[in-house]
Each structure stands twice: as structure tokens, then as C-alpha cells.
Length: 456
Image (cartoon, one colour):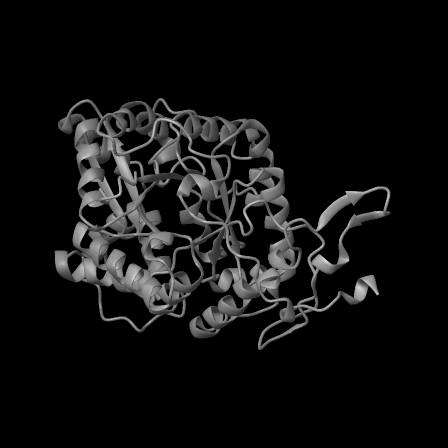
């Protein structure tokens, strides 16, 4: 635990019926209607009962190709509500937990994203976060007028400018710009509303935003890229970093690298929080936990595991047998870091394609563990105390039981050990993460902005 007594951060990642592809088939768990708001409301309220920091919704803007659709019919991919819409509704049934939604910088525009997340931050009274991603699949590209996806380097170059423009739009209204002065006939002060007049490589944006500055100044920025380009983007722009680390030493390397990168950019390393993903099976005994983990894996058809492996590697392996070893592969244009981690796992453990597929379909190189509540708490404490994490993003294997087990059995142990809070410290997600409100760029440097043409 850090010497200043800082406690760990806990988030929960919502994968429809669970992070495990067999989770929706788990005996005894309800087969959820993933278009039913009540399912998500219950999960958010359970997480809030556990005093968790945030409820995180991933997203993509594509669907498995026709060639892979039969395999993916064994998953619950058919239900994928648009996350900012969902989180706006969840704001009405929660009071404290942060609400983080994914949106791609590849197939969106900065103005729309700035407006969407500023609105969510106002509706939640400062509990919103944006998970910044670059779309990695050709399937997504084909929904937006392209035959193939944008090159990896170009996607990240676009993302760098995209985030800068969004932050500038959030700053285009200074704090205190809305005055509601009836006598002076001034609802807002035009001197505190600024034009961007941005002309960049990828975007041309006039501004200002038509939503006042968010309660947090900037909604929390989340990034999850593991490639060098992803790490560079996170170090410069992110408040919170989600990562997949398959072991303590990999987690330590990533943690140290991100803190060093942030410091080199002049940022306070304590203001960039790293939380690895954990898939945990909690049971009364270690034997019961391992048996449940094995039973869950048996619910995943081999065709789905093999198809998922090919998707993550960005490679066609259909001409090979599950008993074959993974051949050398060309570098993918998609998730390069994920591909590298999977290849490294295959080589280090000498896995066949079939065995590798079963590993990948469950965790995609993140850390999975089965044990008692005390063993799970020990694991979290070890990573937290030994420079691998500021906290964790829980990816429950199945819902709602996986989340309920962690909240009811593991969190009380962490609280008793002084590693996790017993109450929310503040009203906004920034306050609960211990992060400062960003300075308004226009207020700090008035020369940046001109009076908006729209008011002239």
C-alpha cells in the first residue's frame, strides 16, 4: 500500500452476462435479457453497495462477420446497448458510483463526443468517464464507409488530436460562465465562452461547445492501449488506465512504465491510476473454486474458442489443427499488443492452438484466478503493495453472481485490512479517485480564445 495510506481503486467491467463467454450458460444464473434495463440497474446498485469506484461499459460498433457468426452464436453478443444511453439511465438509480462508457475516436467526431460526455457529466452530477479507444476491426470499418480499418499508427495519431479537441471543447465554457442575471438580461457571460477555431491534421472544429463546462472540468479519461502508441496516448491524456496483465511481473513492468512516462511528460505520476483487469472465481474452498472454473470452461464450444483466438490474433488459422503449435504470424493492424501477449503466452507455456484458444477465450491475456475470499484478497493486496496496481477492474465471469460474490465476500476483507474504503469520500468520480479538477485552458490563457462568432 502506498506510504500515504491511499486505498485501492475498484471498478467493475460489465460484459453483458459476464466476461467469460460461457457465463450466460452458468447453471443457476438467470439468462438475462440484455436489452432489459433492470439487469444493468441491479449490477450498478450491487457495485455501489460495495462502494466500488466505477461501473464500466465497453463497446464496439460492429458485429461478427458472416464467416464467424455461427461460432459467435454461442455468445450473448446479440445484446449491446449503446453505453452512454445506458449510463444516463443508470444515473437515475444510483447516487455515487462513477459511470464510464467506451467511445471510439476512429468512427466518431470530437464535437459529438465532447457534447455527449459533458451532458452525461451534468446528468450524473460529476460521475462520468470516457474510455478512449481506437477501433481495431475491419468489421467496424465497413459500417462507416471503409473496406478496411485505418492503419494502427494513423488511428493513434487521430486519437491524440481527437482527445485534445474534446478537452478544449470542454474548456470552451469557463466555470461561472452561466450567471442567470434576469435584471441584466444575461443568462451567460459571453466573455467566458470561447471559440476554438481548431485547424488540425484530422479535424477542423470552430466551437464553442453548446453545453457548459462539465462538473468535473473534464470527465475522467480512461485508456486501455497496451501498444507503445497506446501507452504514449495514456501517459499524456489519461486519468485512469485499464490494462491486462497475465502475471505480477508483467503488471509491475506496465505500472512502472506508465508512471515513468507520465513523470517524463511533467505529469504527477500519482494522478494517473493503473488498474489491471481481474477475472475471479470466488468459492468457500480452493477446490470448489477450481472445480467451478473448470465447469465454466466446459460451457464454451471449441469452435467459439478457436474463432476468438483468430479474432484476437488477426490471423486465419482454419487450415491448422487444434493440436498444432501456433506458427509465426505477421504483425496485425488491429490490437498489436494483445497479439504479442497471446503469442508470448503460447511460446512460454508451449501450448497447442486448441489449448491456447481455451486460455484466450476466457481472459485475453488478463489475469484469472480461482480461490477463497481470503486468497482473492491476498492476491489483490500483493499486487497493490508491490507496485503492480493502484486497484483493479473486476470482470465477473458470470452475472450477477460473480459481482455479488466479490462485493459480499472479498470487499469486507479488504475493508477490514484497511485497503479499501467503507464510504464514498466525495460526490464526483474525480473526488473519489483522488484526482484534481483540470485547469481551464482558456481561463488560464485568455489569448487562446476569441469571442465566439455565434454571439457577434
